[in-house]
Image (cartoon, rainbow, N blue to C red; front, side, top):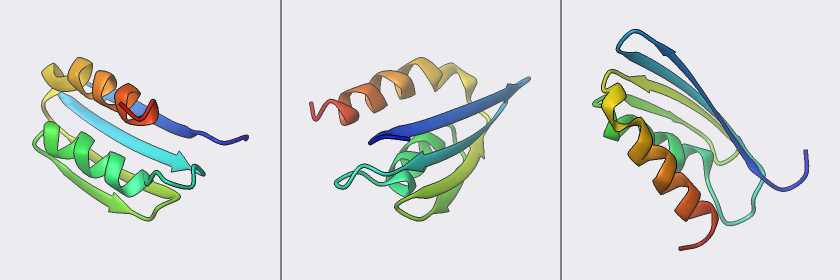
Length: 75
């Protein structure tokens, strides 16, 4: 993997589970997961390079994807 962040979402009914893997110097997988899960009324954690979590508000998924794209583009 070159420089990047991978975020995998598993949606099952109204529940969403996430894992994130990161190797970008100034980004953190843990911060991404904490934002994602807090937006879904859930929780999660990990380290700068790997994190996981989940939540139950699938209505927020589009907002989450838009936010992560902005973070990765330094907007």
